[in-house]
Image (cartoon, rainbow, N blue to C red; front, side, top):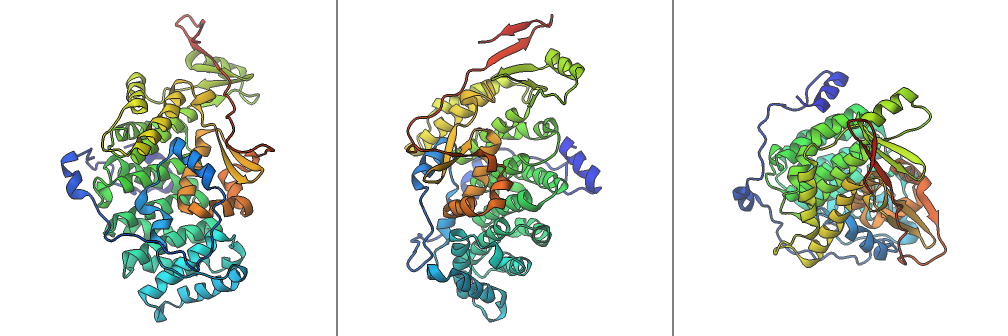
Length: 472
């Protein structure tokens, strides 16, 4: 039984998963038969719809190219195929009309629900509508759940899932989480649609991040680890990269928020993530690599005045010491025992080529793992940390300089897509929940010109005699 499982049982006294379940790994021979394809081509129409701001398109390209690949089958733009919109100046009334349609399910058809969900999603992406939906979120969630469980079409279920996720982001509450969590988790294995499974996993992760308590986070993280370790087999999606990617991303999002001991989290998860580095899908490799970088970041503790001198000396004598910019960090435990093997694997991903990969995907893979490699070799400083700026307005940007920040951004930005800017600019609770409200910086220069250089750290390790050795 894993350490994380013990913590869950300690909190709620009951098991949620089968700890003796056999784990299946990389059955390559089954990959082709298990792959799922989506029928029909997509020609997304935006005529007459709410015009979502794309002011951040240019810096989005730079930001995403550095460390992420979106899962095509779960992108918002792929499922908003139903035309229909509202006049921008009258969006509040139009939203109320659509909510009335959504709640009046008895008189609706599958096509009508698709249209209502599409307009609802577009409105919540283009406008901060917490006041407009407040007081109706639980009822709306009930309608969304009906379409998720028993939608007449895959599109209806996908739109309903996205609408539910955006409702949670816009107006999160414990009541909303209580209404949705158990239903989504219990019905997840029953869905035939692989894209729907992936989107539900992402919705579970986001919902738990915004509204779940620590016990709920630990339980969901354990559940996600089972999905990852079995390559989706545990929920009937064997060898599905979309599902594994969603589970990796959701696990990372929750790991940035949980109050659990980082060492316990690491012991349960890191072997599973290392195995996923062998995946043939770039998005899975990168999500696993980013989680590994996060676990290395979490293995360090800053020495401050609250620590007793005896404790400081104890850890200085046993752990790796990093002195950076007049701050001292101690690595109390080694996240991965076979670190040299891990470094060799990741180093190969920074230069390796796979003929089946598109050129852009190869570049993305190489760039992402360049930073992930540095995060293991020299965490917390320089190229061992993300060094990115995310534009908010013409003269404001977010400093993304920690792995936990990057993983939170990826976990939420993939769901919001074009609505990301809306929530950054107008949803103060969203920014606070991201933990980035203090990372907004003002600038009077043009974006994209140069990057600040990271400071060089001084590494020291301890010999058996307790003397320091410089490793510059």
